[in-house]
Image (tube, rainbow, N blue to C red; front, side, top):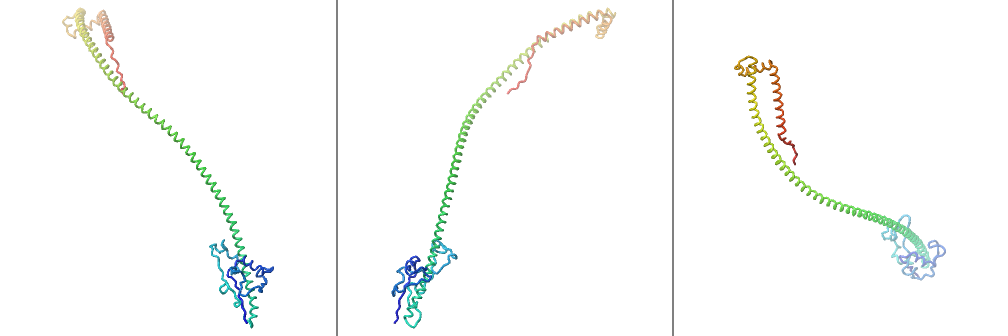
Length: 347
């Protein structure tokens, strides 16, 4: 008679749930370290674990050789590696698959629990490895959380520093802009005052220019009037001087005619007296003294021979000179002086 029973082992078991499910079958040693499994309580065809719970099918993994991400994947992409499961469909493990060849069904039944125990011990080792992997992942998550908190704190501090620097720069820029705005306002006020002063100066300059133009016109008119007056006065003075000179010339001509007449009369009287004197002194005939040469000889002879004659001639010469000088002085006093012409710069 052959008897068979099935051991149903789910393909996926979480490590913590597996440990809780097999806590009653473990002694002081950990699973996989020689703990015995009581198979008397197992029923034929009943599963070893509750429905939905099974041992994990992950082989032992070296954590130092393969870096893990936050989600258990090597690169953090979320695709955790799936390891191959047990032979078969991975959901059931029957005694027929675990049995060895023997002479009776009872021998095969006795050998089947030992083989199942070895497989369960392997599963316990794999569960422990998964637990260690889970603890390593938890530690990595805690480290990453700490690093993330530290980075967040550093980022917050950096953000605060940047915000403080930006606020300081903005405040400084605003202060500089306010100062520049005030400077521009002062400069604008100064420029406005300068513009008003320049406008007033321009108006004053325009009024001064008009006044200077009027003064120049007045000076030009006055100069023209002075030139006309000077020309008229010079013309009048020239006419008066010309008339006076003509009158003086006419008087001088009249006086010259009178003087000529008197000189002729005196020369006649003098010639007659000298002729008689020369003729008596030299014993010449009067006819010889009638010629000019004879008169000259008689005059020279009378001057050298008779002293009184030379004295009288000198006296008469002095009297003539004195008379001529007095007439010249009287004429000079009577003649009006011509005005001196001075060149004046006009314009």
